[in-house]
Length: 525
Image (tube, rainbow, N blue to C red):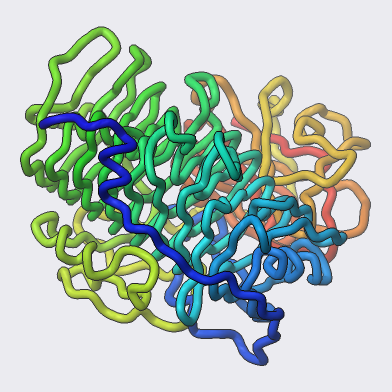
């Protein structure tokens, strides 16, 4: 396949999209809009689910400044809100807005240190023109039915480090759906990734979206040693005219199914540094080296099934270049904890063409290659009926008790991280053996994890609270390697469950009377 320069190849594929800037005002919608349809799928349905602004106020915005004003006008940084966007969002109409419930910046849509937000395009559509969407230290975010284009990291104007949508620093539960992310070239033309995740970003789903005309599709992890990201699902997306990173995985687990990859010019799914990719029922077309470990000798892993390789070429193996083809076979087994329904790979180009991207009416597939309208009611955990290849979330067999466990507290000397933290608190305080120190989430919900450098077998945990503004009223205990639920409960205390070998365990707070204080997160064999 012949090569052309990124600028020539990509500019030839694009037509200029000129939409006049809107200057309307924020309008409060008396009832929740049906624009946000169905529920999150894939890994975004795990870890408590992703519901965005469901149950909160719905407002309308026609400028970036109005989006920021809507976030800043909430009672708190976690008050649910749905922001309906119509028109063109650009640098001229995206200013910083200040408030106690937001942390915004000019020239970028800043979803920083917040939770429970839905951003959805309505009406004639929402186009973020050279303005990226930045998600940082946030959770439970839905972005739906929007177009983000030509975001630059160099040249003028710049926004969001050149990422169309970028997530970093303790991000949890993001669902991006029916959106179009596009550039007009590669790094030499000033563009970076279309869909990037780094610095402890987990439980993300990208569905029914289009990524095109870019040097870089997206990455999970910013370096070979930055391995805190994972649990990502990509399904029913179109990757078109992408040079590489479709995506690049550094560590973590990802699930790619029913995607259409067309004209991947240099490499495609790049699983490296111990990453595990489940790759099934995708259609790869007119592309090169669509799966493997590329540009490194740090091996990654994959499980393949049901894929179609149509006019795909493969390079020879080298010390730092390991294509999975020309006859891709699995080198690992990768399980996922949720239910899903597969379309046949043979119909993927058709069904993705009819459903993926902004402005497609939020159509989805029913598992038989037939587009249909989704249920209008958003839910956190709704999943399609599983197929033979699906692995639904098992029913927890744990027992919540009040009796403390016996033995050595394995959390002492381990590592820790979390979804967010209140000012003055630390993740490490939950494993220091000191009941006078504590971690608090930035609100009433959040998660904290204990992690080890190698698999450790545990069968019980004990969570001890410090007196404070609130107490835990609901929680889930998660296997940090698979996302599987180990236990659930109400008040904090002790839980036992079948012995499980893992390298990370997460205590997720789903409800509290106020901001809780976790003094110790003890783990026992």
